[in-house]
Image (tube, rainbow, N blue to C red; front, side, top):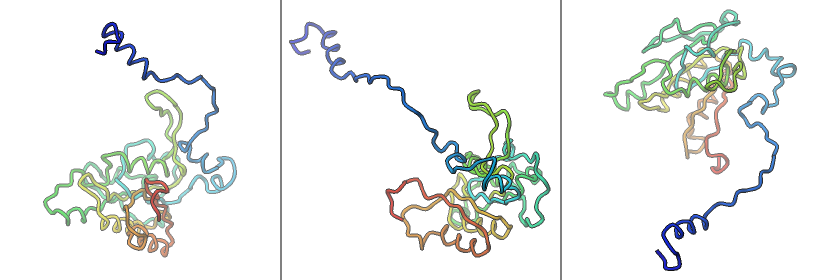
Length: 246
């Protein structure tokens, strides 16, 4: 203890006072919503315009390529959905903790692709060898895109209301290629090709590959093939903002 202080308590108090943060004055500021409200961010209006004209995605078939789906969620029930379009050619593939009865007029297709994982390591055991989601990511992406109306939801009692996706009247087909045991581009391409062959109208994919030029990016290459068959591909642009050149 420096001799300038009378005791250890004085020394401690002086140190605390020297680093104490200044409390700012309480200024009331305006607050604006961020992209939690995606439809508002996109300037979509439920009463008129493109959103209403589309019938909230009526009968559009969205192929979500990700980590599968949790089919028991209320977001994927088929209340209010008409019969499955006859142009649909896909399947509901059974597997671990997933059977064909889990598909319905909302979740019209489910498939999974992991031959790339098995080729990389033939000894690997796939823990959830089906389209069932284990981490929640695939389910999250699917519900944002086309979750049906789910009443009485809340976040542990807060913000109670009705949740829905941007296109609650669209159909969903899920293609799982991302497993706990890994994810490979061969399985991704197989999923995209199958989605196009099944007759999806659009593909939604929130996956990517870092630090490669576009002409080597399998998602970009496969997207050209999908486009030639009339399927629009909507892919995420990564998690690095504008810090990485495209």
